[in-house]
Length: 252
Image 1 (tube, helix red, strand yellow):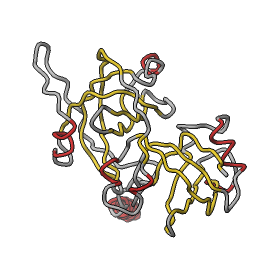
Image 2 (cartoon, rainbow, N blue to C red):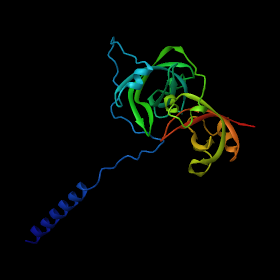
Image 3 (cartoon, rainbow, N blue to C red):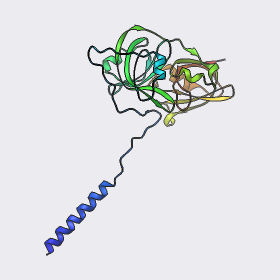
Image 4 (cartoon, rainbow, N blue to C red):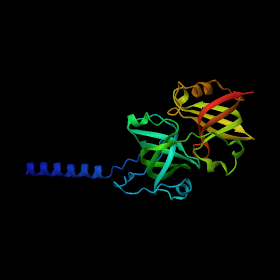
């Protein structure tokens, strides 16, 4: 009888532990502005001999979110390669593309110099207003194109600005209103607030694009509130314009 009761108690405890495990919530990945959400479906690779329909920039803009897209564009810059992925700023004569964590070998990453042509197959996505291509693969194509920065100063505060999202742009006569290091000290991103026409705008020195040893990173660290600067960068978007600065110069 004692053995029977002991066995019964062991069985009851085992069932209790199983019930607790079933109640454990599923963990949800934390998504930050630096890590955009991604589609879980990889881009399909066309079968051998299959004709690929390459989109114009207008067709890409008109394509619905989460749909597969194929574009031909030219590298203008890129962030650091890691884990067989690379984030690329690309453009053609009609517009620009942000290629988030493009599948890429380290060998091919070294070939992604400004002007290099690539055909990209991936999925159109959006994160906090930033339209991008995710879960993508690429192949090299012939041709070259290096964009000239377009002066976007007059578009600040207008609906026209977002039409140039991800393009290489410039802003002139901006006043420094604030400089803040992510995590409070040099070595990570720098958040820069610049004023123009009575309004304030957010910019970023993206450390994976322009690291701590670059001229732009060092120059931003020497600026003070009230300095007037001219800026160039890629017109990234995060809840509004948040250009990734590639060069900055104090004027006046």
